Amino acid sequence: MRAATISCDVLVVGGGAAGVAAAVAAGRAGAQVVLLERYGFLGGLATAAQVGTICGLYLRDTAHPKATPVAGGFIMEFAGRLERAAGASRIRLDNGLWVLPYPPPVFASLADALVSESEKVSVMLHTTVAEAQAEGPRLVEVRALAWNEPVVLCPGAVVDCSGEATAAALAGAGVENGAGDQAPSLVFVMENVDPGLAERGLLEVRRELRQAVEKGSLPALCERLALVPGTGADGHLALKINLAQASSDLPLWQQMTAWERQARALVDELQRFLIANTACCRNARLSSVAPQLGIRSGRRIRGRATLADRDVLDARKSAQGVARGCWPMERWGNAPRPEMTFFNEGDYYEIPLDCLRPVELDNVLVAGRCLSAAAGAMTSARVIGTALATGWAAGTAAAFQALGRPLDDAVATLRQQMN
Ligand SMILES: Cc1cc2nc3c(=O)[nH]c(=O)nc-3n(C[C@H](O)[C@H](O)[C@H](O)COP(=O)(O)OP(=O)(O)OC[C@H]3O[C@@H](n4cnc5c(N)ncnc54)[C@H](O)[C@@H]3O)c2cc1C
Image (tube, rainbow, N blue to C red; front, side, top):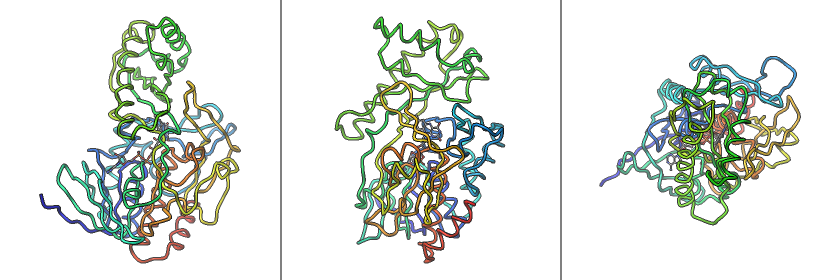
């Protein structure tokens, strides 16, 4: 089969939060953009794993009645349009953390609208990148299967937003495997649940689960059930079951297959148990299960700079800062609840452009979960608000590179937009 060849200024690999922001940024900066996504819809984990709330948009704050944005620019455009389209509004959780709940289909259609509005962006869905070729420090060719037909892409610059630094790794960039850093979760939705449950929390449900686990009638992992905030008031309650961290050296594809099957079997047991044994779910039904298991950390690049845990906890700023993070470190390990490490209320840290640049490749940037960060720092920088921000920064910088403009000018533009 002969492969079609497609040239562009900027190629964006992966249409999750980071990839959508990168494609829109590069298009608005004047570059011809191709956005590749392996699924038939955009949004990445935000839609495929039905995450359900955006973190990292507003500063932590226990005092004021209104949320303060962490930065201006695209992330606030995205949040504002999502709020209007979903009829949703931001909510404050424990410890002053603000989140924006959203229905996953609304996130996907907003992502579609944003890329469609830019005549410079072409989207290729059902397109999976499988090879990338570098000549010296330049990535020159990416090969993919587009609905099972081979295509060759020849870009001026590449933004890798695959969540796994796939294009960068295939082209020879140094990477780190973070798959074992955090536990994955599968989200599922029950309908016709007692609406009071969302307010009361899972205390009573957990008691029932514990007894069943102790009797040996449910697997121990069933106790690791959590609520998705902002759901349940209309009787549709989103829940997530948290698996154990990877403990072996299985290849990633083998680990993913095992996790997906284990999580889906647990959801099946859990929903039957909840309906049969808890008053709040007596009349409930399983409504949907996310198409993809939620992976909190995967492969990431070793960048020209690396975001350190102390950068996050000391809320460090940088003259090269192109994106802001404001979410605490939130590490999901093998305990039922995440381990939270906070920095000062009302503050944020900055992510320097060099955290988005692999050491080995000059015309490649990364964003979202692929950026160069220590394991702890990534538990903060991975959230959707920050992924949108790093995506926007990487897309802008890639467009400047492809159009022959200095990267320092991109940094200056981005810093102005953040303010
Ligand atoms: C269970 C769970 C709960 C979470 N809860 C929250 C929360 O409440 N709030 C929050 O803000 N964040 C949350 N997060 C984190 C957040 O959802 C993700 O870190 C964020 O969405 C990552 O965005 P991304 O664009 O970097 O990557 P992804 O969303 O992973 O996007 C990567 C995209 O690349 C595509 N892709 C991958 N490989 C290829 C390839 N070879 N070719 C073509 N396309 C490819 C994928 O299909 C995907 O669309 C949660 C994460 C998990 C797992």
